[in-house]
Length: 146
Image (cartoon, rainbow, N blue to C red; front, top):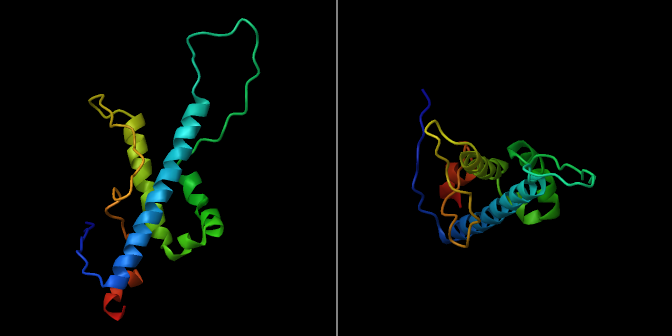
């Protein structure tokens, strides 16, 4: 049986600054990833109830944007924006997993036929938490040494 523990941290001032910076960067990453998904959805959507009398060329079909594609692009994100290098890759992957879960909840109805609302862009202050999936993260393990 897997157990999940939730800890309340009492960070120092420098740790608060680090956590706020990470939260802001993860919020921006969420918004960018959501924008990619919505852009893909708008480019692949087409009306199927009618067709043109004149033949039209089919444009390039973009690759489906999902968790795996966006997670594989994390390395390029870190190269383009060096401030993302200080955030653990696990935190960024968990952020994308949360987005993927919200995205699937919106597109796929549950057993009762109900769907969740469209994932929203996060404003400043909306990203109140992020996840450390590994217990041995130095930020948690050696909090007394900061």
